[in-house]
Length: 398
Image 1 (cartoon, rainbow, N blue to C red):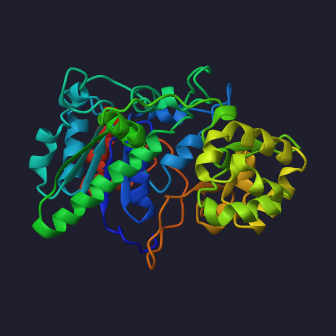
Image 2: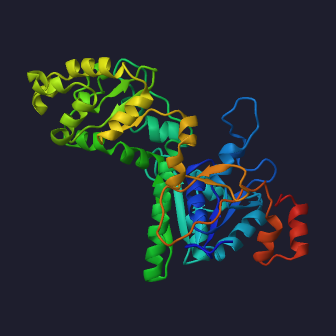
Image 3: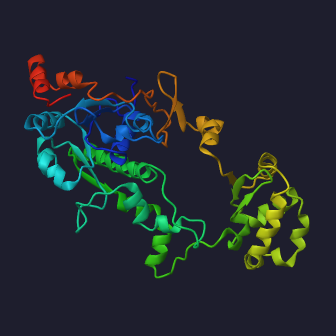
């Protein structure tokens, strides 16, 4: 394994689906040894999730389980729980998102594990938090992060359209970053005190944080209306427009005093600088609909490729509404380190969204098969060949 920041850090990923396991993936990118605990047989149910109907492919699994080692362990069996407890005794981080009642039943709640290892960082992730009537309620990012926090209601084209559904993992991956942050903060505290502890996060809290601008406004007593139709946007210079070839892009021209004359010159509408409707920021807001109509007509005269060159030439901030295919073919994704190849060089994967100068991430290794590393992990934990054979015979391991 390539030496990196977390080389030597032992992490037990006893979570399922996305947010908890993705936090472990982030640690693995910086060299942590992540042991993925999953049920024998079919393994983590996330393996079977597929974006393509009728195909049993593991594209999602390759993203959230790269670099990990798999231990197929029956946690319903007392001997399986004993194996987990032995692993925890020498681990640095334990991550779980199992429902709270399940943790008690499987003896993996904080009260069961933290006494085994005072340096352990126990990372607990839930849907709705760990207090209140809904603490034991199950949830996914679509229900707890997206729908419950106001995001689903507000992220729609206008008040007349139906609420927008989230994409798979859209709330889980940002939430995973929150879990990772909590773990690293606790590791820093451990460096100062020598002690581990429990860190907690939830889909609900991460979703509210993502919707923080609207929520904070409402907390001060102001109403937060749904966004109007684009034709009635209050700022025509921060609106989205369609080019001649049917492609959309969005502008964010906020430094109007400096950028507006250059922008109007570039699009061939210098005359608008003398139009009293658009002469000041206040008048542009009052006549935003009219300015939007003018710009609609202008942008409909050229293809997107031409407008990209023109707008880039005068420093206008804008973004094309890219398809997924375009995002993958975008060379800037690779320059930024957002897309990197797997170690075998055959495919690319989405990389952790931050970098540390002077710290190398490990080459991305393919996600493991169910129980692929049973023998190696158990040997490292001190189990003999006979012990392993007994556990396998009992169905405790895969």
